[in-house]
Length: 409
Image (tube, rainbow, N blue to C red; front, side, top):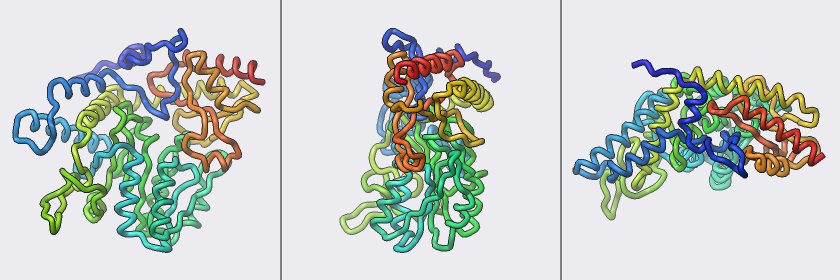
């Protein structure tokens, strides 16, 4: 079956919230790095599940339980295909990328890392990929080391080479910076770490919404992402892990679903993936995430990347015409994220004016306070584009920035 290519108008019609008005103006949504909007296909999949299928999974012999289980496990299979995982059981449901990182730190980290071992992260990490490792270091006596960031928002790979050593026991880095949009050279990082038999986790929260990820081709040991970033529901996410590592990691939580047998003397645990999925899972949102992946593949990754690149290049050209604007993060490899300040103006004030004009951007430190400290600023204004945005919306952003400059300077 050949699916007809949709127009931008047709795609926008798939996202009901894009028709909303704010302060009497049509709404422009440039906060996609915080969360993507939801197509009708996702909303309908969740509604259909609750209206026609809902029952608890895996535990029931009755028809609806089996039907719910089929939908739930089909969604897991879709995620495995989406990431090109070698096995479906390498896909663990989580509440999001944050829980996925915490799971690895709390299980692999506690079991295999000891005092004096070094954990390597980068200077552009989201707090979710800093704090869990700090907590582990405090508990185990490990040492957290940081790959420095250069002025243009790229990683200092020479420093990475010098930091990587026989003392390094784990590497955890962002595939894409949420604050700057930089695409990091993760394949090089993985290859160099693996040469020393060091496992690598990739925080893919900002990658999987912009381009197709192949975990086998990357050869990463762990990969996490959040459903809401890829235009799926909130509260659902994924941890991918290689089977040989997941097998030797202890459970993260105890309770139902993750057990094989329980006595008061001893509990034995279920196999993968259920060992890490205690309790009733978020069935409906897993189904919704599967529908979101189906929708993205229907639109097509070639179209998504071309549209986002067109928007990014156009926005950069127009913003550079505003001499009062200072850009942060000018790496040669970026996704459609622009981080900037108006000289002498607090980002919150800029965001407030844009909001009154019906334009949603993100302001602040973007959960990357160490990165902002490195740049010597309190935060930025961040405009992030998705494939459903338009050049006309960017024109409105530019007009809004001109108004902010006139009012605030």
